[in-house]
Image (cartoon, rainbow, N blue to C red; front, side):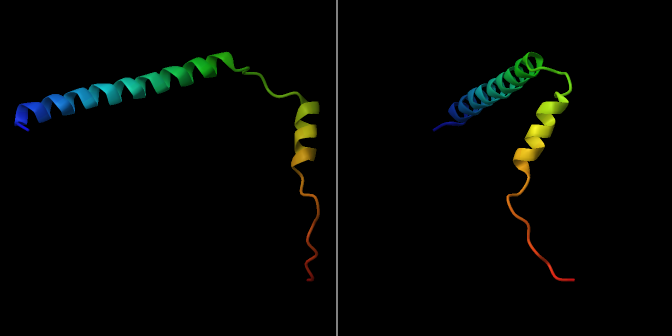
Length: 62
């Protein structure tokens, strides 16, 4: 391979990689705009907290 072929390959690789990065940020921005921005409902937050509590507790002697 000659140096010009390497340069062309690296240039194309950089363009494709840059396009993928821009696409990723664009998709993230669109998803952020579509998601609700309000605070969660207190009832839903309480139910979530209850579901995430551990099933049992450890006994630790002092």
